[in-house]
Length: 140
Image (tube, rainbow, N blue to C red):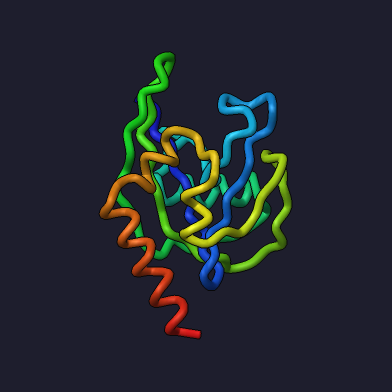
């Protein structure tokens, strides 16, 4: 099983989603950005590294969500999600063809990869994310 970390990067009431390039494992599908956890790092270290590499952003992990396991037939991944905030940097697409900020309702309409869909279909993840977004709104 391949361990993959992903970031649900929050800014206000919006979540950053990124679209895969045509030559990726999941062409044109949207995802919460991230990547494989290397053998020498924790999932938290992995997500910080991956987001710097892919998006030129330094993120801070705020909370973890429940991992999702997805069998693609040729590979099985364990997607480890983290709610993150941006500490610094300017968004730059180094590994995706597009990115956009969406709200929770828009997430229901996005053509996510299977693992990312599974994250949001988990009721506990969906509720925790909504709760986090509600706290963000109350803090502003």
